[in-house]
Length: 503
Image (cartoon, rainbow, N blue to C red):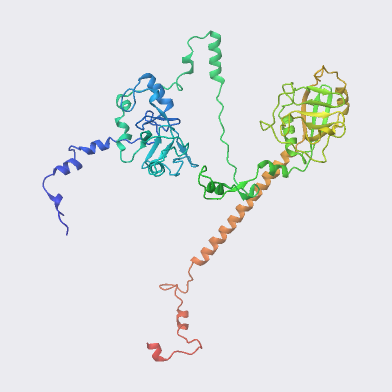
């Protein structure tokens, strides 16, 4: 029996019971109930996670998009109400790990509400207090751990101190108590900045507001490793992070992924066929997709999406080449289907031999875009400099007619040679994509069937092992009584003696 077991059996209430369990004065409990802690990664003005942080000399953090308009309007510190200008703020450099969490760039310690966080005033870099204490203060080496810039002890700003949580209590903030707010100009009406506008301008703005939609940014999806794109080597992130302090620590090996285009090009076994309809007649072209797949895909896709339609051959040199593929018609424009340039593809058996050879025009090594040329005769001095990817197999008469057109001093035809339309007869890349997709679906189906088969086998074994054998009905139906009699027999088959049975 313990002491004071009947403490609450009194016929009256004590002051403690009245204060804690009933409606009495709460004292410090009421104050603690009003405590509201603001996380270190939030702006002290908007109470939202910051994007571009600034801080005061006391370590109070604001977002630049919130504090600048507030200072312009009120000119005071939103936390304590003292006068403050934008010059009193210090730009901070927070660092994140691969999991998008704030951490110390030296010790890689992830910050939380119990971490001691400091910043260096001269550089704005944010570290854990433990790192600064051991690597700066203890050896008296007062230089920034990242930039090696010198600082003094007075330049160390406490961003978060777990022993001083009252600093993070936003219930005591000056702007929160006095309800000081600034209108967000980004969310305000965009027309409010226009002082005066004509009727025509106003109608254009109204029409734009109805029809215009801001482009949506699509997030790039991460490719997953499978039987086809998984390489036999890893990404090397574990070794790199082990030998370099500039990288985040990685402890798990990840399989490197083979580029999707490599898988597609391995399945391209046919040649492509395209017809260019010009105002001087058609040109039927055979493309060497099985030998130079990237160059041919660039040309085929441009033909299919209408990139060449309506463009002019801007350069023609008799007994040499006919050049086109530039939508601007100047010889300076054009781009590849990937948005930039791509590498040359040279094959020793593909040379500028004969009339009607189709090759890529460029401005140097690995600068292919969309421009191409067709030879009027052999040009072996271009071998190894320009990628041959096709030849004219029909419409040589059209090529003869184009060669006879007069040109000016800059080799520009005096009469326009226009690509009126493009027709793709055979596209081996579509077949390769379908084949790869089919192989992946078959592999997934096979893996699914194998998994179902293993699951059925597992369930069958569990059912066989988990069901006991019934030897008889009633109580003790699972006990093999016949087996218990045989247990009394000796190994040689002799019966035990009466004395042994009694014992």
